Length: 182
Image (cartoon, rainbow, N blue to C red; front, side, top):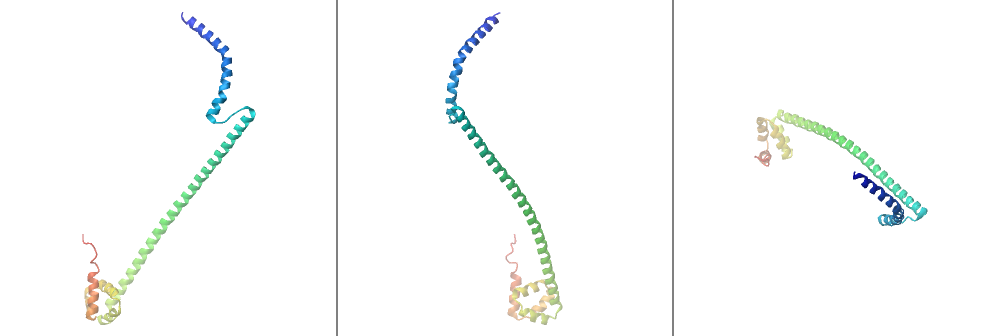
């Protein structure tokens, strides 16, 4: 039964605080603007000051909304640019594949042409082929002789002047000297 004195004490202290609360409220009103000024740097004296603060907050909100819209526009532009880059990279990959196929076809055609021309030189009489090889650039002649069957190449080399035959032989022998062996 000690609760009753505690409740009575609380009620009495509440009454005293309410009576003193008027003084506290007046004091709080006097301190609130000073605290607001200290925190925000803005002074709010009356309705005109409140209106100017409200206008300042609205202007700030408009600036923030404009900045947010600009950021969203940039994000959309970056998304569009990224999509375009991806499309261009895909197109570039396709062009690379197409170019690779075209180069392979050109290499094959060139190889086929060289093989056919080599067969023509092999079918010729060795003296006639030797006369043509004597006029050729030694690098080109070495290429053809390297592709020919050894018997045909030997017959053509026999028909060449010794200096030309030596130069072509040296080119054929040195063609793979730079290739690493290990």
